[in-house]
Image (cartoon, rainbow, N blue to C red; front, side, top):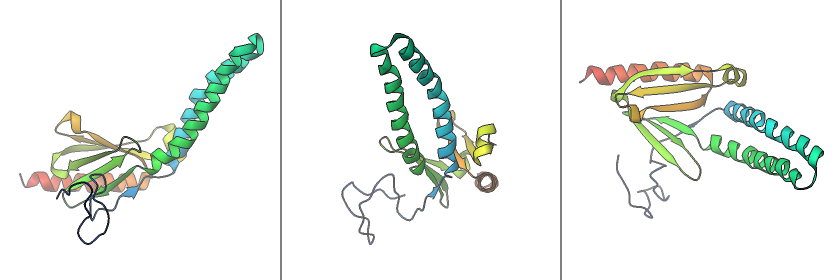
Length: 175
C-alpha cells in the first residue's frame, strides 16, 4: 500500500488522500439492524435511571428533577450519535488484507492480513438475532490484532466467514 502525504491529492482522483480512505478500496457498510440493537440496549440501560429520577422528583421535588432531565438529555444525544457511529462502520476485502473501519471523531482503520488469521468466529445473541445481525470475530497470531465486524446480516456473516477462512488457509499454505 502506498502512502500519500496529507494535503496532497491522489493521482487522477482529484480527492485528498486519507489514511482512513485508501484508494481503490470500496467499503461495505454494516446493517442498519445494528442501529436498532444498540438503541434498544441504550434505552433499556437508561430506563432505570430515568424512572428512578422521576420517582425521586415526585417524592422530593425541587432540584431532584434535574436527574431525569440529564438522563433525557443523555438519551437524546445517544439516540442521535448511535446511527452516525454505525454508518461510519464498514469493511473491505482487498487481495491480501481485510480492512475494517469505524469511528467518527476517533477514527480507526484495522488491516488484517489473510495469512495472519488463525480462525474466524460468528456470534449472535438473542437481541442480535431479533434485529437480524451477527458479528464476525477474527483471531490472529497476536491477541492485540484481533478484530471484529459487528452488524452483518447473518447470511453475509456466514459468507464472509467462509471466504476469510479459505483465503487464510490459502495464504498459510504458501508459507
